[in-house]
Image 1 (cartoon, rainbow, N blue to C red):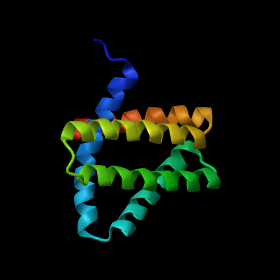
Image 2 (cartoon, rainbow, N blue to C red):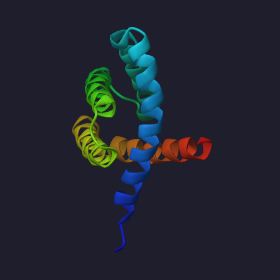
Image 3 (cartoon, rainbow, N blue to C red):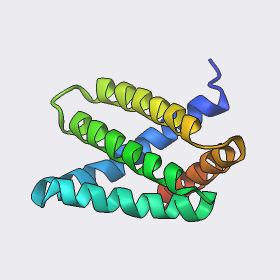
Length: 128
């Protein structure tokens, strides 16, 4: 069975996200989670704002989505669910996040967003 490129990328992203999210989740639970989550979302939004030349409205919407999905992913990661089920749900959440970002960004911005996301995943995987 051959996996298409997007599915393979999604699997790689999910695995790398889970490793990163576990560390972030631990830090978030030890401190003020709301404040740290908003700071991380703000930093991520600033990165995307610079890289994608976002409008103020797009940046605001993107920051809200980043926070929304970070909360969902964090709750899922900390749940007592089996790892296999967590992975499947994280994949689905990532698909939904990409879909929502597509609604916020223009076509060229979305393509650049995907490209940079893939690049960040590759760099992150090299570190682990």
